Structure formats: structure tokens, C-alpha cells
Image 1: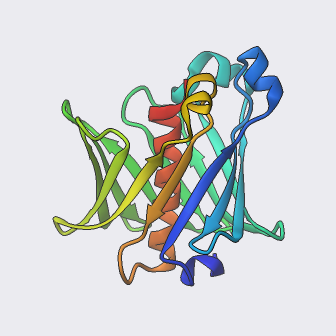
Image 2: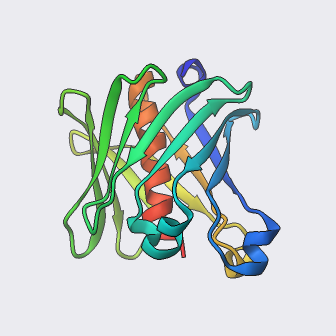
Image 3: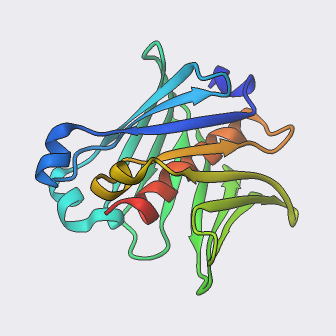
Length: 195
């Protein structure tokens, strides 16, 4: 997680295989993560069941392993099966809980609560009904950062569910809080943008 200390923003690009594009079968998600200067700092790979991906889609349980560009474990995330109140937890490579991101009930917004390992609120994430690709990060009610789904182009958006995201971290955010926002980005992709 050392690279998170040094960066104020990240760009995440989902990688797709031609077999998935041609057959429509959902493969395990893979992502490349870049810092603000465009240098790859992490890559992430989903671990989970093919049957769960095909049948349960966004409801499926899975683990997402985030590794440094050199291949060293950096963060591990786990998403249990949830019907509506989706949740993802982030852990250090040694297994220490960093915290969790949990979806909250809302009819008109997409809302999440981010908590640390002790359950204390770190921040809230919310996307308005008319801005479904912009997730604002709020600390104590004040806007402090954002997670954006970036437009990938007409063909890519039409024929794949390969997504590009960016996250702008709150000023002064700790490494653990940045790791939780990165986990939130992956949860948002799975819940809202997977087909």
C-alpha cells in the first residue's frame, strides 16, 4: 500500500478478453490501476466462481486481489453475497481488516457508508439520480473527493462492460482511507456497471 501514500488520484481501467466480448460469458474481472502521472502502480484480479458470475451477476460473492505492479500483494477485498445491501471489506496482505464499504438504502440516490476496522465512519459516498456516473465523497457532510466512471467510447460502452474509473482522494486521506475508496470503486463497478 506504499504507493497509495504518494498519490492524490488513481485511474482504473478494466481489462477485457476477446473471448468474453465474442461469447458474452462474464470472465473474472481484471483491472490495471494507474497513478496521476499514468504509471501503473497496481493491478487487480477477481477470484470467484464462474457459475456465480453467470447466475448471480452483481449479487455474487468474490475476492479481489490488488497487487503492486511488481506482483506483491497490496490489498485484498472480499464481497459476500448480498441481495441489496452490497458490501465489500478491505484487508492488508497479512489479513488485518482495514474497513468496509456498505450500500445504504435510498430510493433516489446511490449511497454508501465507508467505515474503518472499528466501525467508525470514514466518509459517505453518494451519486445523485441525474448524475449516475459521478459518486461524490463526503466527510462530515462536506464534499471531499469523488469516484467517476469515465466514458470509454461508443463502441466499447455498447459492446463490452469494460469500464474506466478515476478516484480523487480527499486531501490528507490516510493510506487506509485511500485503500477503502479504491475498494469502493470496485464495488461500484460490480454493482452498477456490470451487465
